[in-house]
Amino acid sequence: MPRPVPSGPLIGLTVVRNEGDIVGQVLRHAARNHDLILVVDVCSWDDTVPEIEAVSREHPHVVLITSLPRPTFAERTWRHIWDRFRTRVPAETWWSYVDGDEFTDHDLRQAVARAESEGADHIEGASALFFYTESEARAWREGREGLADRARSIEERRWLYRMDVYSMRLFRQSKHLRWLEDTSRPRGLLRPASRRANYRHYQYRDLDQIAVRVRTRRGAETPEDFARRHFHWSYAETTCIGPDDAPRPRTHRAGEELVEDQDLPRVWVPGPHVRATRWVRERLYAARYPQPPPGDLLADVDVDGALARARLTYR
Image (cartoon, rainbow, N blue to C red):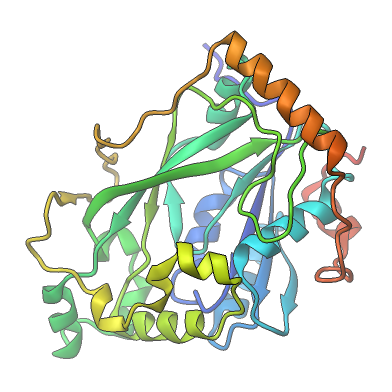
């Protein structure tokens, strides 16, 4: 029986800063699931850009569209990427968030096709947060693990996790979407798919990377309410190291599937009456608040060149 395929392309939105130790692995993995990956680097000082360029030579549909000269936070940049490309892509396009330190083991094209068959317009994703433990930090300090180990798959190096949070990870293009500045998702999404996608999130990978991560986040320009909601951005690096006997841990080895956490809220698919109410509310919102102008953050991006590399059909 043939596998279902989506009706349009799947485009990834990626904003990275100082993820050079892992971004190559992430983008090579994501390239298998996307028709185009649009990457923005935010003034990295490590080898993030050379890593992205190396992947782009192997996979032309992974495109570094610009390197920003000043630090800015990812949610703002996602919105500007989408705004530059949304009027030039096929109407059936799906958009996907591709974080620089995350992997999904799902076939996203198949997940999108299944969501379309349900009439869904977005897909939620559950995040498995991988720990960096005290024993692993001790191995790094004692020289039993070092920079050379970064060449190994992150799956081989970090294996203790717990299911953390879930959020919207993929959404379908629509003329009714409105994405305001400094928000993490567009307005106008009405119906989630009945099944979530799982993501492996490797925030903390080794002591050197944790130190760079803390410096990177302290130097980012973030809106006040974002910093208040994401208070972990102000953590000292030592608080990023967890105990080996952390509560409710799970283990993951390469090739294994993540174990679902039944305590995480399940995606709720609303009934027809609720969907109709949401439809009216979101359409009224769209009529009242037109899409803001794109601004000049990514004004010089070569939209035509990026789409041509992925051989996407213009509208």
